[in-house]
Image (tube, rainbow, N blue to C red; front, side, top):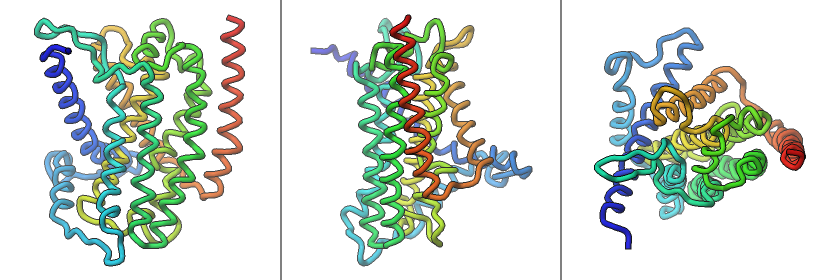
Length: 328
């Protein structure tokens, strides 16, 4: 039986990670608006708090007190459940991502990861793929044809880009010889995998943008119709939960990119957690930069790019990496 201290440490890690995720999700909305406003030579949020720092709190209060409308013809049970199905996988995906080296506190040796699972990468891909059910079911349960179209497009987009995303990390698995994210970080002690897998990193980054429904691949929630896609019938906190899921997914895929390709928490001089957060927010900044720069794809361009460009490129990267490993 594990000692009681084990459960205390585990609960403490879950509470810290969950709390920081919630805080980061709230303030990523402020950060994105500020960064994009700088790109567009304007100020962004300024009125609520110094430099608009209290704007996320004001937005949360506003959404909590907005009227919660449920369409009369909606499937009420699934309509209410769908935002939760989108949000929960985004948060529990972080459970296997290492965010620092082992430390010693209060006489206990503590790993800076909630759980080091030997198939952590498979767990993460499996859990992350469940989030699309919240989007599809939300569009279907709304009993709105435009919302349903948005949900179905999201499912097709997920299948197209998750396949290439999974193939893009095969090179990392061949080089590290492990599915454990802790061991993958350990395998980058001499060189980050972005130096050995630049094509894999590029494919992963593009697929991550599409997986999180971010511009220029935000077709499910910003379509050419005069509606907002799959969440057009949602309001109040249910509406907010979809956006929380999007930003939480963005944090998770940025953390995964950091872990797989950027050496994770490894770096000189600074504490490991600082290195991890610095790399994570660098990837997030890149996501925001791309949103501020590129126009939205058409849906046929989106699907063609996934199947005819990214998939063959990912397969070619696997062949080249396999030849390199065999010759080495």
